[in-house]
Image (cartoon, rainbow, N blue to C red; front, side, top):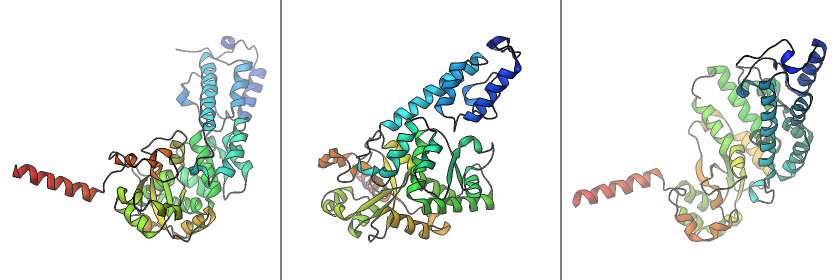
Length: 342
C-alpha cells in the first residue's frame, strides 16, 4: 500500500507545521525517523522514547495511517512493559540487593520518565544510561559502552533490570564490559561469540554468586539435590546468594519452578553486595572464564525463597533438579547392561 506524501492524506496544509511536529518528535526521542514514509513497526527505533511522546503524537494527529498505527503500538507496548514491571514483588528475597534502587527507579518510570532517565536519577554509576537510539546501526553494544561509558537502554523491563545491576554491582559490570570490549577489539564481532564473550554473556544474563559452607558447595557441584536440600538444609542459613543475572531477575517477576541460575562459588567470608562486587571485579579474567566455572542452581529450591520447597517432594522433579551428566551416563550404562542380561 502506498501513502501520499504531499500533505493531503493527513490534513495538513503547510510544511511549517509539519516541520514543527517533526522537531517535537525528534526532541521527544523519535529521532531520525521519517514518519511520512510507509513503515512496519519493526522499522521504528522505539527505544528511548517516552510514552508521552507517542501519546502526544496520537493527540495531534499522525501524518499517515501507518504512522498512526506505529504510535498506537508504541503506547500499547510501553504500557505493557510498565505493567510487567509493576508486578515486581519487592519483598521477595531475590530483590533484596536491588530493592533500595529499584523501587524509586520504578516509581520514576511509571510516572512517565524513560527507563534511562529513571536509572540516571537513582544514583551514581560508572556509566550513564542513554536512549537506545544512541547506538548506531552496526555498532557493537559492548564496545559502545566501553568507549562512551554509556549504556544504550530501551524502555522495557529487561533493560530496566540490567540498569539496576549496573547500579548495584558497578565494578563487576565494568570489568565484564572491559573484557567484552577487549575480545571485540582482538577478534571483531563474529557470527558466534568466542569462549570468553560466551561465558560473560551466560553470567551477565543468568549468573549468581554463592558464599556458602563447603559441604553445600560440594553437594551443588555434584548435583546431589537430596543431600543439598535434605541433611544439609540447615547450612543454607549460613549461605548468601547474590543474583547478578538480569534475565534471571526478569523471569522471577513471574516465578516458575525451573528458573535456573549459573552459580559461581565465592569466599564464604563475603557478607555484602559491595564486597561481592569488589571480589568479582578483581577475580574476573579471560583465563578463568573460558572453562565456565558455573554450576546450575534452580533458584526456587533455595530454602526460604519459595514456600512450596518446604515439601521434600518439591525436589523430586528430575526435569528441574537434574542429576549430573556423569551420573546420568552411568545410570544409562547400568540400564543397558541389565537389558542385555535379560
